[in-house]
Image (cartoon, rainbow, N blue to C red; front, side):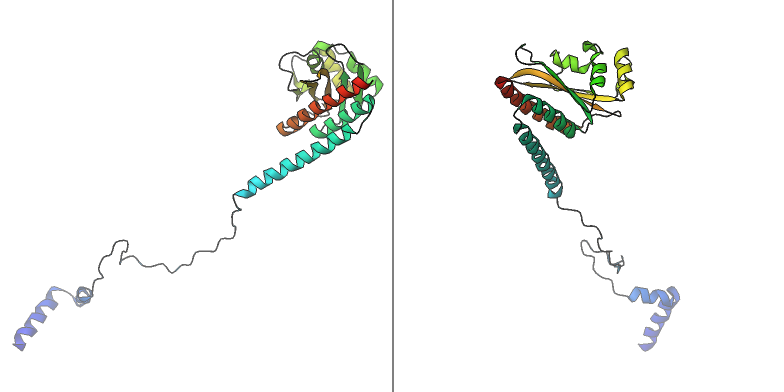
Length: 238
Protein backbone atom coordinates (compact mmCIF):
# COMPACT_ATOMS: atom_id res chain seq x y z
CA UNK A 1 0.00 0.00 0.00
CA UNK A 2 2.85 2.38 0.86
CA UNK A 3 4.51 1.58 -2.44
CA UNK A 4 1.34 2.51 -4.32
CA UNK A 5 1.20 5.86 -2.44
CA UNK A 6 4.83 6.63 -3.31
CA UNK A 7 4.18 5.80 -6.92
CA UNK A 8 1.27 8.21 -7.12
CA UNK A 9 3.40 11.00 -5.61
CA UNK A 10 6.20 10.34 -8.10
CA UNK A 11 3.72 10.51 -10.95
CA UNK A 12 2.37 13.86 -9.75
CA UNK A 13 5.89 15.29 -9.45
CA UNK A 14 6.68 14.26 -13.00
CA UNK A 15 3.50 15.93 -14.33
CA UNK A 16 3.76 19.23 -12.37
CA UNK A 17 6.90 21.00 -11.06
CA UNK A 18 7.31 21.58 -7.36
CA UNK A 19 6.51 25.32 -7.61
CA UNK A 20 3.20 24.63 -9.27
CA UNK A 21 2.33 22.09 -6.62
CA UNK A 22 2.47 24.83 -4.01
CA UNK A 23 0.21 27.01 -6.14
CA UNK A 24 -2.20 24.16 -6.66
CA UNK A 25 -2.37 23.45 -2.96
CA UNK A 26 -2.91 27.15 -1.95
CA UNK A 27 -6.43 27.81 -0.69
CA UNK A 28 -8.70 30.04 -2.88
CA UNK A 29 -10.72 32.83 -1.28
CA UNK A 30 -14.38 32.79 -2.18
CA UNK A 31 -15.51 35.53 -4.58
CA UNK A 32 -17.80 38.10 -2.96
CA UNK A 33 -19.70 40.82 -4.86
CA UNK A 34 -17.63 43.97 -4.92
CA UNK A 35 -14.43 42.32 -3.75
CA UNK A 36 -11.73 40.99 -6.04
CA UNK A 37 -9.32 38.90 -3.98
CA UNK A 38 -6.66 39.21 -6.68
CA UNK A 39 -6.54 43.04 -6.54
CA UNK A 40 -4.05 44.26 -3.92
CA UNK A 41 -5.34 46.69 -1.30
CA UNK A 42 -3.70 50.12 -1.53
CA UNK A 43 -2.05 51.37 1.62
CA UNK A 44 -1.65 54.93 0.23
CA UNK A 45 -3.29 57.59 2.39
CA UNK A 46 -4.95 60.38 0.34
CA UNK A 47 -3.52 63.86 0.88
CA UNK A 48 -5.67 66.09 3.06
CA UNK A 49 -7.63 68.94 1.41
CA UNK A 50 -5.70 72.18 1.62
CA UNK A 51 -8.47 74.39 0.20
CA UNK A 52 -11.97 74.06 1.52
CA UNK A 53 -14.59 75.69 -0.75
CA UNK A 54 -16.61 78.45 0.84
CA UNK A 55 -20.22 77.92 1.79
CA UNK A 56 -22.79 78.41 -0.99
CA UNK A 57 -24.18 81.46 0.79
CA UNK A 58 -20.92 83.43 0.63
CA UNK A 59 -21.64 84.74 -2.87
CA UNK A 60 -25.15 85.81 -1.87
CA UNK A 61 -23.80 87.54 1.23
CA UNK A 62 -21.30 89.48 -0.89
CA UNK A 63 -24.05 90.57 -3.26
CA UNK A 64 -26.27 91.66 -0.38
CA UNK A 65 -23.40 93.60 1.17
CA UNK A 66 -22.86 95.39 -2.15
CA UNK A 67 -26.54 96.29 -2.43
CA UNK A 68 -26.61 97.61 1.13
CA UNK A 69 -23.54 99.75 0.40
CA UNK A 70 -25.12 101.14 -2.78
CA UNK A 71 -28.39 101.94 -1.05
CA UNK A 72 -26.53 103.61 1.80
CA UNK A 73 -24.65 105.81 -0.67
CA UNK A 74 -27.87 106.67 -2.48
CA UNK A 75 -29.59 107.51 0.81
CA UNK A 76 -26.75 109.82 1.85
CA UNK A 77 -26.80 111.65 -1.49
CA UNK A 78 -30.56 112.13 -1.48
CA UNK A 79 -30.37 113.46 2.09
CA UNK A 80 -27.79 116.01 1.01
CA UNK A 81 -29.99 117.06 -1.88
CA UNK A 82 -33.06 117.31 0.35
CA UNK A 83 -31.12 119.66 2.62
CA UNK A 84 -30.76 122.23 -0.20
CA UNK A 85 -33.29 125.03 -0.02
CA UNK A 86 -32.52 127.04 -3.18
CA UNK A 87 -32.66 126.06 -6.82
CA UNK A 88 -29.03 127.00 -7.50
CA UNK A 89 -27.68 124.93 -4.60
CA UNK A 90 -29.85 121.97 -5.63
CA UNK A 91 -28.55 122.08 -9.21
CA UNK A 92 -24.95 122.16 -7.99
CA UNK A 93 -25.56 119.27 -5.60
CA UNK A 94 -27.25 117.25 -8.33
CA UNK A 95 -24.30 117.64 -10.68
CA UNK A 96 -21.78 116.66 -8.00
CA UNK A 97 -23.76 113.64 -6.80
CA UNK A 98 -24.32 112.38 -10.34
CA UNK A 99 -20.62 112.67 -11.10
CA UNK A 100 -19.81 110.66 -7.96
CA UNK A 101 -22.31 107.93 -8.85
CA UNK A 102 -21.05 107.34 -12.39
CA UNK A 103 -17.37 108.17 -11.87
CA UNK A 104 -17.14 111.32 -13.98
CA UNK A 105 -15.18 114.51 -13.30
CA UNK A 106 -17.10 117.20 -15.18
CA UNK A 107 -20.72 117.85 -16.03
CA UNK A 108 -23.35 120.16 -17.46
CA UNK A 109 -26.97 120.59 -16.42
CA UNK A 110 -29.70 122.39 -18.31
CA UNK A 111 -32.94 123.28 -16.54
CA UNK A 112 -35.59 123.63 -19.24
CA UNK A 113 -39.12 122.57 -18.20
CA UNK A 114 -40.95 120.93 -21.08
CA UNK A 115 -44.18 122.79 -20.27
CA UNK A 116 -42.42 126.14 -20.70
CA UNK A 117 -43.24 127.20 -17.14
CA UNK A 118 -40.63 127.97 -14.53
CA UNK A 119 -37.06 129.23 -14.69
CA UNK A 120 -34.36 128.15 -17.13
CA UNK A 121 -30.75 127.72 -16.14
CA UNK A 122 -27.44 126.19 -17.19
CA UNK A 123 -24.95 124.93 -14.62
CA UNK A 124 -21.50 123.46 -15.06
CA UNK A 125 -19.27 121.23 -12.95
CA UNK A 126 -15.53 121.56 -13.59
CA UNK A 127 -16.23 123.76 -16.62
CA UNK A 128 -15.44 127.46 -16.91
CA UNK A 129 -17.85 129.98 -18.40
CA UNK A 130 -15.73 130.04 -21.55
CA UNK A 131 -15.87 126.24 -21.84
CA UNK A 132 -19.63 126.27 -21.35
CA UNK A 133 -19.78 128.84 -24.15
CA UNK A 134 -17.82 126.53 -26.46
CA UNK A 135 -20.22 123.66 -25.73
CA UNK A 136 -23.20 125.85 -26.56
CA UNK A 137 -21.81 126.38 -30.08
CA UNK A 138 -22.42 122.70 -30.90
CA UNK A 139 -25.75 122.27 -32.74
CA UNK A 140 -28.38 121.11 -30.25
CA UNK A 141 -29.61 118.32 -32.51
CA UNK A 142 -26.06 116.95 -32.75
CA UNK A 143 -25.75 116.34 -29.01
CA UNK A 144 -27.20 113.72 -26.67
CA UNK A 145 -28.10 116.54 -24.30
CA UNK A 146 -30.23 118.18 -26.98
CA UNK A 147 -31.96 114.90 -27.87
CA UNK A 148 -32.83 114.25 -24.21
CA UNK A 149 -34.07 117.83 -23.73
CA UNK A 150 -36.32 117.42 -26.77
CA UNK A 151 -37.70 114.15 -25.40
CA UNK A 152 -36.82 112.12 -28.48
CA UNK A 153 -37.52 108.35 -28.49
CA UNK A 154 -35.08 106.03 -26.70
CA UNK A 155 -33.78 108.78 -24.43
CA UNK A 156 -35.84 108.13 -21.28
CA UNK A 157 -33.25 105.76 -19.78
CA UNK A 158 -30.26 107.94 -20.61
CA UNK A 159 -27.68 107.88 -23.40
CA UNK A 160 -24.10 106.67 -23.15
CA UNK A 161 -21.45 107.78 -25.65
CA UNK A 162 -18.42 105.71 -24.58
CA UNK A 163 -16.09 106.89 -27.36
CA UNK A 164 -17.13 110.20 -28.88
CA UNK A 165 -14.02 110.76 -30.97
CA UNK A 166 -14.30 107.23 -32.34
CA UNK A 167 -17.77 107.94 -33.78
CA UNK A 168 -17.59 108.29 -37.55
CA UNK A 169 -20.81 110.34 -37.75
CA UNK A 170 -19.95 112.77 -34.94
CA UNK A 171 -20.80 116.36 -35.83
CA UNK A 172 -17.61 118.19 -36.91
CA UNK A 173 -18.20 121.06 -34.49
CA UNK A 174 -18.88 118.61 -31.68
CA UNK A 175 -15.61 116.82 -32.46
CA UNK A 176 -13.74 120.12 -32.45
CA UNK A 177 -15.16 121.19 -29.08
CA UNK A 178 -14.58 117.77 -27.49
CA UNK A 179 -10.96 117.80 -28.64
CA UNK A 180 -10.45 121.35 -27.42
CA UNK A 181 -11.97 120.74 -23.98
CA UNK A 182 -10.39 117.31 -23.60
CA UNK A 183 -13.37 115.02 -23.09
CA UNK A 184 -13.73 111.68 -24.84
CA UNK A 185 -17.01 110.20 -23.57
CA UNK A 186 -20.29 111.29 -22.02
CA UNK A 187 -23.38 110.06 -20.23
CA UNK A 188 -26.68 111.95 -20.38
CA UNK A 189 -29.75 111.53 -18.17
CA UNK A 190 -33.16 113.20 -18.35
CA UNK A 191 -34.45 115.04 -15.30
CA UNK A 192 -37.98 113.72 -15.44
CA UNK A 193 -40.64 111.92 -13.42
CA UNK A 194 -44.29 111.02 -13.87
CA UNK A 195 -45.45 113.67 -11.43
CA UNK A 196 -43.16 116.54 -12.44
CA UNK A 197 -42.77 115.82 -16.14
CA UNK A 198 -39.51 116.65 -17.94
CA UNK A 199 -37.62 119.50 -16.27
CA UNK A 200 -34.29 119.27 -18.08
CA UNK A 201 -31.26 117.04 -18.54
CA UNK A 202 -27.80 116.46 -17.10
CA UNK A 203 -24.64 115.51 -18.99
CA UNK A 204 -21.44 114.15 -17.44
CA UNK A 205 -18.09 114.04 -19.22
CA UNK A 206 -15.21 111.54 -19.08
CA UNK A 207 -11.63 112.45 -19.91
CA UNK A 208 -11.04 109.02 -21.50
CA UNK A 209 -13.31 106.60 -23.39
CA UNK A 210 -15.59 105.12 -20.73
CA UNK A 211 -19.17 104.47 -19.74
CA UNK A 212 -20.93 103.77 -16.43
CA UNK A 213 -21.66 100.16 -15.49
CA UNK A 214 -25.25 98.96 -15.36
CA UNK A 215 -25.33 99.26 -11.57
CA UNK A 216 -24.10 102.86 -11.77
CA UNK A 217 -26.73 103.71 -14.37
CA UNK A 218 -29.45 102.24 -12.18
CA UNK A 219 -28.38 104.24 -9.13
CA UNK A 220 -27.98 107.43 -11.16
CA UNK A 221 -31.45 106.93 -12.63
CA UNK A 222 -33.01 106.53 -9.19
CA UNK A 223 -31.21 109.62 -7.96
CA UNK A 224 -32.22 111.67 -11.02
CA UNK A 225 -35.91 110.85 -10.51
CA UNK A 226 -35.72 111.85 -6.86
CA UNK A 227 -33.84 115.03 -7.79
CA UNK A 228 -36.52 115.91 -10.33
CA UNK A 229 -39.21 115.82 -7.64
CA UNK A 230 -37.07 117.99 -5.37
CA UNK A 231 -36.40 120.50 -8.15
CA UNK A 232 -40.12 120.67 -8.92
CA UNK A 233 -40.85 121.62 -5.30
CA UNK A 234 -38.16 124.31 -5.34
CA UNK A 235 -39.46 125.71 -8.64
CA UNK A 236 -42.89 126.12 -7.08
CA UNK A 237 -41.29 128.18 -4.31
CA UNK A 238 -39.40 130.48 -6.70
